[in-house]
Image (cartoon, rainbow, N blue to C red):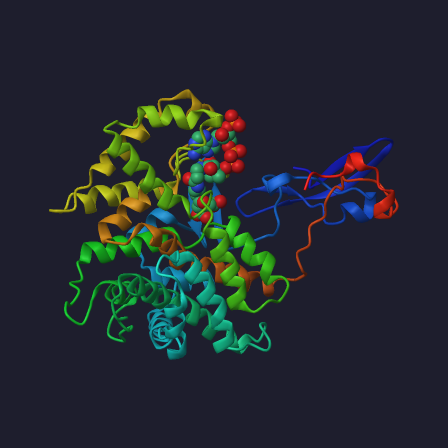
Length: 435
Ligand code: SDX
């Protein structure tokens, strides 16, 4: 297999290296293209462009394969825990018992936010969206944990623990604020997910009973959301991190990107969609027809993916988890039946099949969160809690990879060619824009 590509432009021929990844993905390395030819490439939304070489996560969108550091997501979902996965993504290998204990203790020791930050919650309006609170509070961590040199290797382990641990505390505190209840502090006695659920749902007048099935469902949810290679929010973290911005500001940017309804915000939109269909008394058929119409303004939320042109393996696992959790007494949710019906109808419909639109991670995830008691506007917050180790792993890989340069794409200019200033009293009226 030749390791070169030839580009012929007019009478000139340029030879470009071909690189092959460990999973046999091949790419034309164009890093010298502009220097050699004066040409750049154009790829709106970067669907055909690799921005880095990474060892963290592998996705095969055609086969529906997802692996974290080489481990299939199906095995990790069944056998691992979110804390162990966070260690795996950041450090590259599964931890020994000692490494996991040290990592877990560091997370627990880092779970408190500065007491002065608690007053910030009073300043948010009652209707503040928790994602707006989360991105603000994470950015403000940079004021409580100043980091003169974001590349200081001795600081890395601690700020990563701060972020993985405190994102839970901030999320739970924002929920308590919205409920008008006193905050519940993290407890050293509890593991990662139990700690989060306790901060969310226990109160001075009512202890929270940790249901092992619910703990397992939340841990599974976080595992499945932990990383997904160069998705929009992770690419945002890489781009902002490449300027050497403070790590808390970098992660805050990733949270903001995740908030969008095309990305992590979709899980909340899926539940709203299922609720509307349930309220209409229909089975989703009408909604699906509307979602197929360009000008309807509707999309089948939780369907479609830039990379997966087959079933998102995470959707399959979450679907099974829904079956298990919602079959518990008192947990049944008719929206799950609607979701199953929509999946059945859409996957028989040529509109979706011809566009290779399958359920993605967001299609079933909201049903799990609703069963746990997470309010809808916190669904994407849980996605952010899950994605935190992935963001940090990609930031860490980028800053330690040579060459580590600021990410600065090019463009093709299509605006006005050079023209000269005209004093306002000489400008022809027909250009005047009506006031
Ligand atoms: C996540 O990148 C990641 O890895 C993300 C993620 C992660 O873990 O980080 O996996 C998490 O963000 C999952 C995606 C969650 N978003 C949604 O469920 C929102 C609904 N889906 C879409 O908006 C859309 O499918 C995207 C944004 C996910 C992907 O968009 P693309 O790749 O830019 O595809 P497109 O918008 O160009 O659509 C191609 C065609 C269009 O029709 P035509 O112009 O060819 O006629 O498919 C249609 C679209 O109209 N289409 C849909 C659709 N998604 C695409 N039509 C109806 N319903 C949909 N959901």
